[in-house]
Image 1 (cartoon, rainbow, N blue to C red):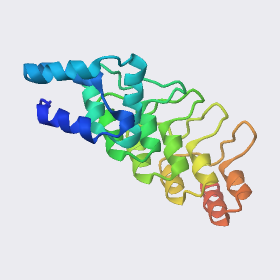
Image 2: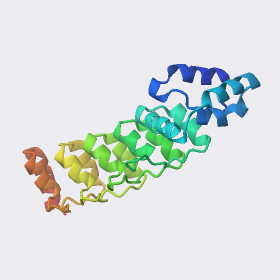
Image 3: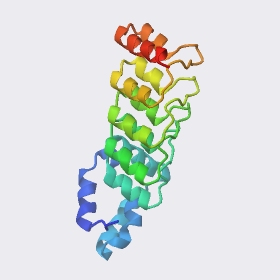
Image 4: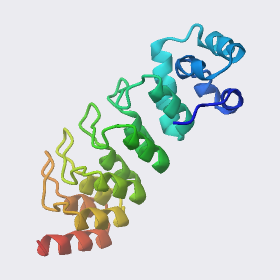
Length: 212
């Protein structure tokens, strides 16, 4: 892994949004790569930052696709699968916010692409809801279960069907998603599409059921 230059650190401090300013935990751990003057500056930036603040920086970086900050924080000791109060991992947040490159980085760094939040929702469910086809393909390629359920019994296919994400639905079906599964309320993907008055989706899923 290449060392981070003094100039790069200074640029990062100026360019990051206010919510992400001062990723001191990463900077302190990387200080050994700098000259003594730069290291002293980095130590100064670290003053007063709590571990909770550092975690907030980590999660905000995931949302905004700031791979430079994520990389520095992880190399400094932050766990790739660190969770926030709702059980979200950085990868879940990156996927939901359409940060495909960040998803790739986090997987490379050892993050679990199939981790779930406090309600059992996975990254794949989140991108199915948002219609992020490219990220969905990445997660499927990483062997995430297309038929996994959250605490309400809902699957990624149900979420994609409910919100009319046709491309994601087709991808999930090709990769083994079961259109006949029911959630805890007794809804199948077809029923959810019917509730949303989406005849094209109903036809697509009904044909998938017949083809099984």
